[in-house]
Length: 111
Length: 115
Image (cartoon, rainbow over all chains, first blue to last red):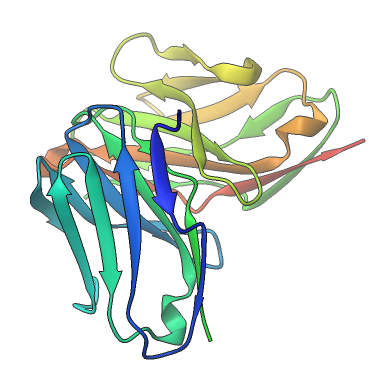
């Protein structure tokens, strides 16, 4: 009965491809996030949605496009993948400023 | 803008010894502060949080942290380290000032526990 789930867990693809990562939360939270963790373990916010509305859009290449079909789902689509996109991507959810609950992560490897 | 500094990217302690992981923050408003733990190839799990209530916060697995406004610190401690505590630890501040509640993470501290 996973609170925040992500699919796939691992994603290996070639440069130039387009891929998507899906995230779902069953906690009833109204805010969802995408974070990127680089090879040095540094975590940085990419996007956040509140009730399907984009509220945070950090300095991220526009090849990255989040989509929230409803408040329980936040997907991340990446166009024209580059080597530098290789990282672990975490989805999280919360109620406003309180605790964020993280998914297990998706390890993206671009070859 | 808020920020978080974690001193020491790697900390090694002997099993049974005190664990002290340091976190300093900067914030123009009273912060919410969090410690998360990440075990290898896993997501982040909340250890404890400070949200303007008691300054000494107790968390899971025997960890605790003390909010010290005068020192702008939120250091994580555990009296006696176990081998199972070996992991990456992240301090985070919730950027309430922006109205968006995004986390600003520190760079992480890898804890190694020696037998």
